Length: 251
Image (cartoon, rainbow, N blue to C red):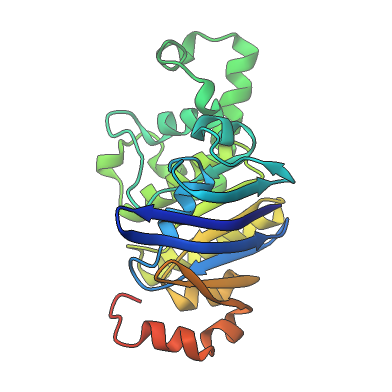
């Protein structure tokens, strides 16, 4: 479904990515690990069009999407979450979901006039929103603003909003970060549900227990290079990976 070929990125004199080749097969959950500063989020930014100054190629469903704008990549079926949550604080949890449901085609006019839409269309949207709120376990928070909700609920909200954009491929940037053990277990179950619905997942994550519960394949980046790939066990036991993490307290 997704592959990168010889991706390299330079920031000044620093090589953030160096000849990176990965492949994500349809229906799989693939994890990208590595110490802080290894280039993981930079690779996400290349794939989703937020960085255009790179060499190499990105292919999605055999189409070359190299150097394509983020909104075009989004419309092709690639959605993502961010380390810093992209949530609107002055509207409710439910209203935040509308942005995902109507994708990024929505304009301010349509958002402000959501409740003036055609009755049947509004009913269909309302049902979809309610189903999604229930699926992600955040129904009880739907009329609250993000400022009133726990951090875990906001993480589920961002995932739900990405889900509503109907992606074929979903990129998750540290989905377990900031969650307690109970919330992590719930996040694992939610990601499994997405996989069961046919959504392919590429995630950046530090939590190895979280990764071992989900990943079909793992890549490890260090100093911008892929140093290992394979199953979770294979990558975890790779000497180069163990060396990369030695003394990294954030791993």
